[in-house]
Length: 437
Image (tube, rainbow, N blue to C red; front, side, top):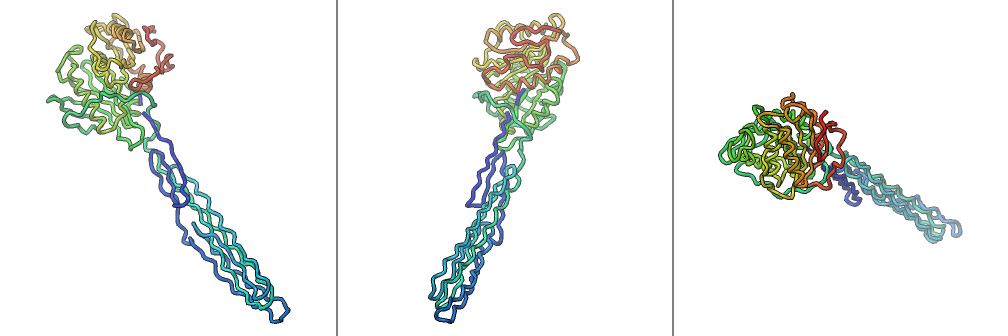
């Protein structure tokens, strides 16, 4: 069972002129800039010095120029102009140093960058009234602008962790909603399709924010005299918790519609796939699930139902696991999408021991031969046990099953399992009969 993360990388362009910052990382950070009240300081004017009285004496020096205004954020650069002598040599104009622009505020995660400080305004020149003295001295330069303020902290990733691996192709055979969708919630749910009622036990996440990674959907079929709660045995609670965290759903039907063809011993029928279609359609509507990650599994009678779903819903099924399932039919059902041979795990016990009415080890071998003939991919896991083994057949594969689902999106290529991952028990093998312990 796998699941899409896809978390989107953050972007942090700084916009100097507008004092705005944007940072995208699955969420929008706050604008980190502030406005200083000293934003446009102006230099005061200096008073001119009086000129000398003698006809040949030196002129009085000019008064000091006004100091350039202090800039706040966005202040203009200061420039002081020198006072001119009355008839002496003109004083050189004092040039104020432009205020240094403020450095951009450092962005927090998702925070906006700080705005640049503008340059300070120049001081006005001092005036000189000397009649024949030398020109007044230059005015002082305006002071530099202050630095921009730092960006504020960004909003944490709403996904809460990584999503499902990328890959695969969105299926084109997603069914439409029939009638009204229930509002799925964790616990008991009721669905009505074609006038029939089905109860569904579910574990339901929350719809992720737009642009965030989306969660998978797993449909689990229980065995004879069991309930949907046995999905915990088949998938493991840690996997269910992760599916919920990703915003996905595990749905376990409780009862059959008894419509269509019997897929085993009367526990499930092919008409129950109409409810599977409704679960898929409503999960897309309510949770915006990752349609590349729709998986199924089941035990015993549920394993037989899983095999039928592998054929009849190949138009959207990404991968599957059959615990003591298989088929005894030499002519399999027609595939909904013949181009999609979804990868599978085929788990069973020993021939002559994994038996309840039929020999599930033989039925599993029959299915594997059909998969091989169709050019599909399977992993055989033969634990050598009986049909009832305290669910160890299921729990031994919990970690491997969830990793298998995540690694196998709809029509993913190339096949990622060129060798058996270490999480699988030693009695499993790729495209070959496993060796029981």
